[in-house]
Amino acid sequence: MFLLVKQIPIGSVSTYKILAQALGNAGKARAVGNALNKNRDFKNIPCHRVVRSNGEVGGYVFGADKKIKLLKKEGVEISNGKVADLEKYLHSW
DNA sequence: ATTATGACCGAAG
DNA sequence: GCTTCGGCCATAA
Image (cartoon, rainbow, N blue to C red; front, side, top):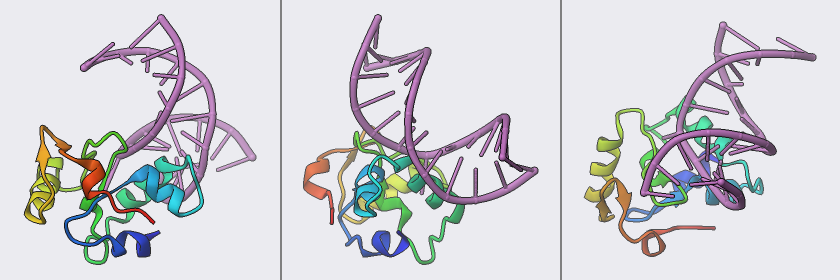
């Protein structure tokens, strides 16, 4: 799964749900988020590009605000703690 | 083995 | 909009 997250290009995001599907484990989004949380290999993995299916940024080890800032920095529009246009920035496999 | 927790999701009220 | 609930799975104690 880490490889998948690593593949997310700059300026794009993905959701826990989609990530789960990409792994062939639809409906196991919770496990995905859990894994990211525990591992938090921000050295290798851009966890900040993974958001909730409803567009909310979700959580982040260093705080959701940092996550948002990073995303905005990469060109993803965030408004009110949510991705402005999820469809546009969504990256899926 | 069992229990509890969590960066989740969808449906229902 | 909101909250609650049931269901999912991985990890830790």
